[in-house]
Image 1 (cartoon, rainbow, N blue to C red):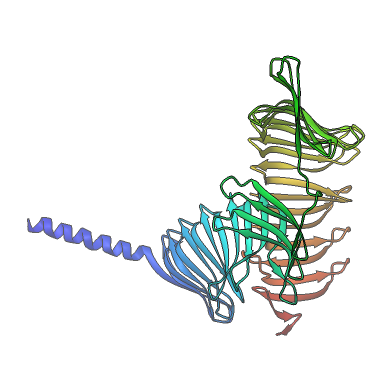
Image 2 (tube, rainbow, N blue to C red):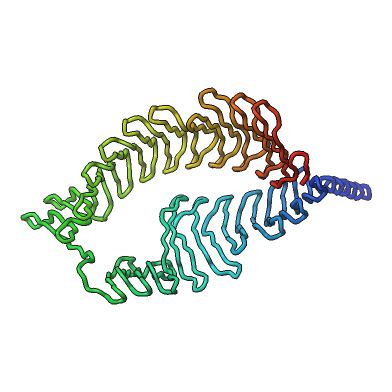
Length: 497
């Protein structure tokens, strides 16, 4: 029994010594002898609490590693010691709230698995809300707002779709005399619009619209001049006109303004089946197809230019685009062909020049660009080629710009890897380097046409200039050199700064 207890104690002691040896503290230094980082390594991987410092000695970042991966809350600081950013990680991936700090405001956003989600907010340091922008799949998507810090009223409305700003509208503003001006919108707590009205010098002018909050439908329209409501016939009030077969069945029903078609009209056969639908604007036919009794688009549709030529044609099924769709220019030339499946682009999407030559080819799956992308000039020469995945560029891409050929590499639409520029005709390299996460790293070279090196630039892993930058003449002789340390110039030639 004593031998057994001794053996257990001995094994525990050996295990303790081994575990202690596997974790070691490390301290790294700048060339100026200031500490650059302090932390621990576990089996040669960062582990535990780490602190990193700017070259001036101020704290640069602090947080935990877990087996080489960023974990929990990390704080980042500017060179003057002020807080720059707070990021939460799980196993090296951004998850949770993320804060960024600026001179007069800060932002609060949320990440899920490295992707921005929900709503990003901007606040003053007194906790007054300045802005809110919704995110989906990492990009702005939906309706966002700017707020006035005095009374929290909405002063700007943004509309985004898949990362693109579709519209920006200024509302609820005062002029230099502190009087209401422009468009004012009354919005309830659920962001539903109650009323829209225009002001000039603090007085109501123009059209005022009131909405039913339960149905979101327009309830009333008035016109104002200098705060006085004007009774006028200028406001469009549509008539619904019907035509009947001799047996009393409806033959057509449509919306008219001043006896001019304006809105939707439907035609029926004698048995009550919809056989055609039309969309008019001020008497001009914009589109024709089938709109069923539930208001859904069905079957073949045609959209028109004002000159009557077809703009676009294709099929709907229950309001969703399906099959081949074709877009024409005003002269009737095909300029786009695409395929839809259940309302989403799916298949080959081809753009054409007016002369019929192919301009661009893209492949889609479920509404996202996936596969090869090729773009041509009007003569049929390739000017861009690469691969897309979920609407983002990946792997190797080439671009032809004038007489230059770009060969670059992407990861998730961010420069990552090789970056080279060549003379398109001679294929002579004029510039080469590498990027990591959108930032230049390591050495970048620029060349003269005679293949002599023109410039050498050096970057660290964070994209900061770090090392000697050298410029040469066409004979290869050094003209000047500058030494950088983490983005700052420390020496010009042999003169130390």
